[in-house]
Length: 564
Image (cartoon, rainbow, N blue to C red; front, side, top):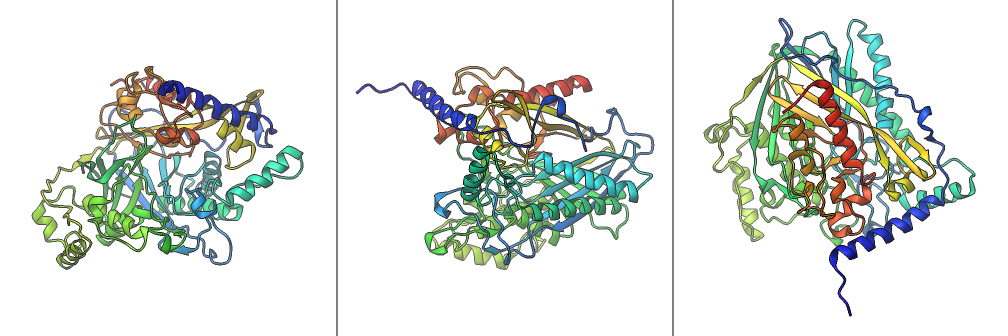
């Protein structure tokens, strides 16, 4: 028997999978929300702060406001709600939420640099993802309320991000009653009769859009002047796992913290944290005995916020470049065997929450703080770890603080639309069956695309941020191995610069920002023929997604006259 060359096997598998799914997609009619290019109209879009300033305006001060909302459905015990994030035979392809262990939250900030260019608002939702179509509904509702309540203010940008937790209500619709909806919509499409069901629960999405827009308004109303500070620390690979994309080994292990300290000492300070790791495990069971494990939870983000709130801060969170990057729980769990997976998320979240609070503190200062260093809890954890044969690790052992810098009151933001071809037949099929809420552009027979958004932010001279509309491959941020022929499945170079080559070597990412288009991987490392090492491609718009996003960033940098 002749052993087939690995590359040839991958190529043949890719061709077979693509061909079968493409044929199935081609057999279906375009949906009612498929439109011609000339019919596409940009609505409820905010470009940003306009002119990029080089220095703060005269007498400029930071202003920031905060608000949050509990988005957990109150009637979850009476109506069916589904978790977004898992489709598996283990749960019979059903993700019905059976229990609520903590809150599904939306956290919002409104921020202004005093330059007169308008207020920018951000909300991060505990969910698997929020599509641009739903975000534009939130923007419309926010704008209507804003113009009535704040006639003397201007809006610079309205940004909605997702934490990407896999254990909150399905806000995209892909995971909601998946087999039933798939069969019903397939039949309706083929017969050309009946209205296709939207994936996400429409009643819940109305509640979410109303609630998030209200929360953004509350953040604007809460604004006050103060100072903004930044601290960044490498918390090491001990807390991250590059789990399932061996061709893309990059991991950003920095924790970035922005802290707003209001002039009014009666106001609560706000801590904004960026950490690039999937919140993916809370809703899963530990063992067969536990049952389905379908529990609603904000995952580690919730417990990170719990600790930061306890220390006297509002908490805001942004995820990062998280394609294949997960939280590594070994060190925080210390070998302890838990009854429920959310308990692992809780330990990880509380530990990284303590780190966020301690970035600028010495070990001696940490040990004097009972929230950061609880001796009774430590002794108990040591005993529990030993009981399970684990080795207890103290998160702050050998801790070295970093210095905090004041951020100049200068906020530059630019948002741009990017057109991305849909050349993954899986996603074309999903679009025709209305498994998620996207406006699809019909370019020709079986040729489709979508409009998404990218963004770039400068917080003074101290922090640069690329906002990306999905799960961004870290190599595209840092310039890692899969961008080059030696590391890519195609044995070809990507041919485009990384984000850090475009905007600067310290640029970080806010992931799943203003859209949720799935995985964003380099074109040259895209294949459907190796699911074990490239499963991300199954949930990607296609093999031009990476280049479409990077071309957008290159064009943005050129217009802004940015060169690193």
